[in-house]
Image (cartoon, rainbow, N blue to C red; front, top):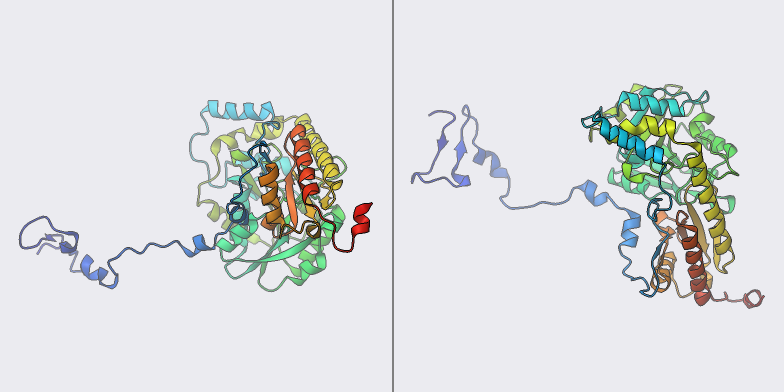
Length: 454
């Protein structure tokens, strides 16, 4: 028999799928190979999919409450500076994109880690004597979130653990748990402007600790670490031989009375993967261009980590080429006035919001120094109707149509996060509504009537 002949049933009709047997060189037929498999559908999500959990979505999506139909909705919950249209990017940035598109040079695939010319621009932009960097030290990514994902994937194996700030950006947990990496939360201290509890941090480190995530300036806190505090963090990392993943997407977005210090400029012996991007400083989160800067002056990472990042970047073949083509002009031509105006607006709104909320009984805002957020403590004993910050924010939506994120989303209950990018008139209206809400629900704590009467 011809080894490639298809055998048909005796009636000569077209075969059913189970009647077809392909014999190739005497090897076993398809039907014989399939004997061990049950012929029924069984399609289930992967373990990775089942482990993936976004705390913000899980909490917010379960809020069934509807806004007050008599009040326009004010959203102070989304960390997107473009929502209200009051913070457009600079015309130079937009023109750079138009020119890149019109050139026709950027319609094909780029290397998975980005064009060499684009990586050279990033290296030139961030190079300094304290932290020298070259194009080979730059990996371009699809937004800062992918930069963080690649860093976690290259540094940690399933079963290892990473150190994550509490309160902190929820994506760290989402990414790590999807990869089978354990989360250990270290505490930030609101009474110290959200500095790290360094003793508690160091107590968490063990032989399975793969990296320490440091987010500075902070989402959700709006805090900016001092040079002295950063040096103390680096001392812990050096003492324990733990590399740092520095989430610096809000780098340089600090108010005039504060100074931003990139972590890599403060240490020569701690290897650091610094993640950044265009999203926040240039006010274009939808353009999805981020980067990883590899700082490894002691060659502790060696070639393995660098090669690993390159391999992982090949999964999606790199970020948008049009944005890469515009990068040179964006970095070189954006006027300083644009950055200054953005920061001036954010500081003004932060001061306005902090002042208004600090005057409301039962609320304890923590003054921010940068980024786009402000954290507000809720003295829950004065709001006995609500069990926690989630219920507080639900009722705030239902009665005042003001959306804030409960800080349970950031592993820090009984706080709320306020986004300060909204227009000033809307910020004032939101604070007024929050005041009205708190006044309606505030109760004197037991034994404190005298204080309430003052």
